[in-house]
Length: 463
Image 1 (cartoon, rainbow, N blue to C red):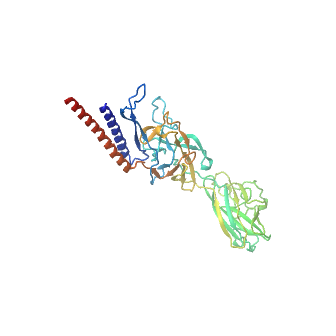
Image 2: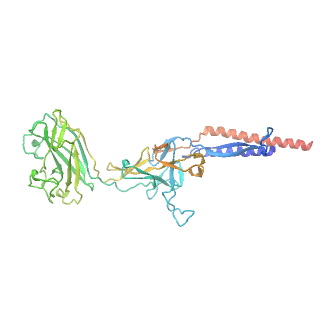
Image 3: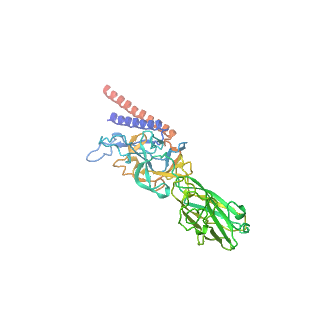
């Protein structure tokens, strides 16, 4: 019996050495989780239970349990390197060209999770899919639109794909102007407004706008102080063609007053620098904006601007946008532009990929725009230690691990995601070296037990 007991101790010590050696070997493996050998004592059982004098039958290995404590996060230069800080696993799917082992006639569904990992070293394949070093897809939740504000369909998986096509242009829909118009300014000496005569207006501003194809158009506004107290007239021009509230460019030779809102189509060739109808801006005696175009509002709409009247070569949809003067004031200080922006964009090329802390992946374009491509899916389990080890720092579900719970980073007990970073191995080398010494001593001690047992038997046989 002594030999069997010592032999079980040798086996246990050997397993401990193997586990410790494996930890040491993977001390630099990205996303690796260290293991520990867990043991239990063994007693010979009987109907009456274990006797008080039962010396025991040795030891057995009950589990080689992995420890899922956080590893150190190290920065990298690759935006597709991702690290989970906290709870959660990246969700992987097999590539579509792999056959289903149970049904070789059916390809693998790339939207079905097959493995989970903490190794966030991802890259692009030839088709633009984000994959790991084994070619497995990184799964993400499908985007409901092109912006993060539109949300994502949590639970609807799709392989994360980087769209390398050009960023689509956006037509200008809103122009925001925050100005201070000099309340102490004088009425211009030239009564009839003419954009080519600086003596007929007080101030002007310009901003680049875009049509649906991304063609640039200069939108200029001119400000003329009237004889009425606290009232100014504003005029809008697109590429030097006057625009009237509601839309159409003013045809040449037609007085602005006769232009009906929303009616008429600009001619194939017009005359530039002819103003459209004035946009009255009124202010309160305290200098705050009161009405725009006769309405107690801060914005005015310009719709159905047929650009063929400006450039016959343009065959695009009509422009339609509003100008918002919110925050504009009339104080006795020099004219100033305190805010001027618009929401249109030209076409652009892909310049980079950004991933935020919630796992939302954005494509960044040279035109300054961005597009939400998806949200990196994370999974967590009721029992991490019950997951099946697949190797390559990945795991699979088992009946005892519980079903995966899917979600996004930062939500529902999930950790955050850090881009351009990788989670290193959680192995503490100094601790493992100490365990190595302890396991070695245990192995030697059990060997000594066998030697002692052998000596006793020889003494008995020689007696």
